[in-house]
Every structure is written in structure tokens, then in C-alpha cells.
Length: 194
Ligand code: GLN
Image: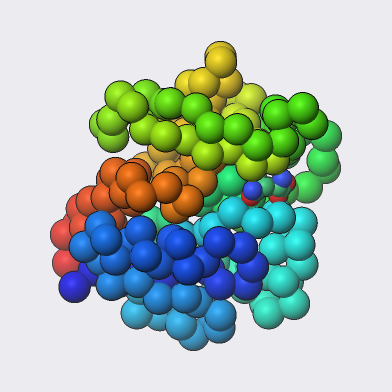
């Protein structure tokens, strides 16, 4: 069975585990680097990206995560998307630098700290409920990045090869289509490796 980990240093871990299980995968929380070993894919949840980065450094996860991502699919939501970006607007440094894109944090402004919107997501659905919580958005993407969803002229979901990211929180709804999409990506990569 396809086994997907959810980075469990901080953030909405349990909800992602449930969504992955509902999507037909085995899912586990990952707290130690050796737990990455037998995974087919990884989800980096929402939370707070600078706090999560501090924990990534504390537990020496940065290089193991980069090495994992060279071969296996990674799906980042909200803060997870920020961690995957190559460039963060207004900051000199980024984190995992997996996806060729620039992101802006807390981009929807204070008055819209959190909101929900119906999204069209390419390959996923025309009516996906997006829950945005102090969400980032993708300012621009490189040529190898496929834009999957745009809300109010802002890119909110994208894919580059075996990397997937969303500015919103699909794990906070009971619509599992985006998780199913990721599980499918993981299964496809598994076939190629095998
Ligand atoms: N605003 C948070 C950050 O910058 C992300 C919010 C979230 O993951 N819900 O990391």
C-alpha cells in the first residue's frame, strides 16, 4: 500500500492523515528523520512557516527533506507551500526551495484573515471549497510550473513535476479530491521508480 507521511513538527497533522487515509493511502505522522525512509510521499502541513523552519533546523530535517524530495513527491499546504517555494517576497532566504515560484506570505490582508472560496482546480474539480487562513499566494511561477488554480487573479495551487502545493487548507474540509490527486501522483512516481 502507498505510504505517505505528514511532517508532524507543527500544524494540521491529524487532518491530513485522515484525508490521506480517506484517499486510499496509509498515512503516518513524521517526527524523526529516519521515519522518512519507508515513505512514498510526504505532506508538509499548514501552520506557521517560520516556526516550522525553526523546528526543521532543531531536528536537523532540512537536508534529509531536500534529499527525500529529489526522488519522492511532496505536497505543501499553506505554510507548507511557503516552505517549498524557491523565493519568498521580501526575504533574502527561502527554505526547501523545491518549486520555482515566488510567494508572498499573509497575502490576502488582515481584513481577510480567513475566508472560504469555491475554486476551480485543474485536474481536480470545478467546485472545490478552499479554506484560506492567513494564506500566502503565488506571485509568479517559472516555466516548469503548472498553475492549477487561480482565485481573484492570484495563483493558489500549482504543480512542478512531483511537487504539489496549495495556498489553502484542503485537509480542513471533507472534500478529499486534492488529496486523491496527490495520492495518484505518488502512485505514478512509485511505478516509475519500481
Ligand atoms: N501565515 C502563515 C505563514 O506565513 C501560514 C498560515 C497557514 O499555514 N495557515 O507561515
